Length: 184
Length: 223
Image (cartoon, rainbow over all chains, first blue to last red; front, side):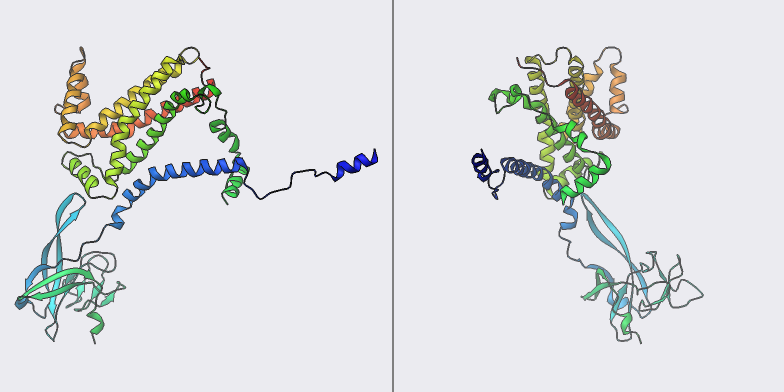
């Protein structure tokens, strides 16, 4: 009896554990993988479709003929011009405004009248209390001739990229101000 | 990681029984194509649902670009189809899926009919299924107008004339459908609202009923 018992104990109680994937696990992975593949086939085109606006190539800044160079004075003048724009399937023209002047060296630059505080529209010399400044009627932001901020706003007025060609001033995209830093 | 998240939620909300109710049940041998290949006919209902899910998803994405307006509808469809990446694919899925869902639903109906699965105690599910059939036809009908091209416009004209020929209430029904005295701007917004809000809502309610009943009663026995 005792020898029999001993023999039983010496037999392996369980099959040796092997580092193999069980059939159940394999099937689970296969099923999950196939489902994920099919789901991705459905979802990915739709996601790409939805995020297309941020992946569309942005149009190169086009220059628009705005004013005759000879008419630009040291006093800023307001010029309005039309920017053709394509908004999805809707084509329209945006009316834009620029304040253009030339400095003492005769260099022409154009400021955007969009206030850097909260986006209202500034005007030149439009407040009697603050002569020869850009003034914003919304919250009283003020800027110098070069667009440097004097009150309320935290940044100088933006500029248009400019190009002089054949006696005409062409304006392009709106960029951060570069002339206000040269101000003494 | 995923298992930990699942366990964390399960400890609090006990969601495993819900999951069991929905998905964890045995497929009887007579409806399992692995046992009898001819049992693939039992897949048509599931395929109808699968395509319906694709329709809902692709439709949701299409409304990111589409506008239901007589001036812009065609232009917006043309834009999303030609200018937006994968626009052809997503609209294609919705376009072909619309036909395919009718085909699958018809095959599913045929299977239920020829296996006699509509008989007691499943008569109510047959009725709900028929209601789903008509809602699906309504979705196809209202969606057909939305691109606002010639085909859409004249197909809807025909539909409205058919409605007009209904005895007694025809003219009223027609005017109600077109939202005025002519087929135009108000017809388009009306069909859009039906296609995108009203009919899908009804469809989802009916589908829930359809599925609860089949889970409650189980699939019909072998022939």
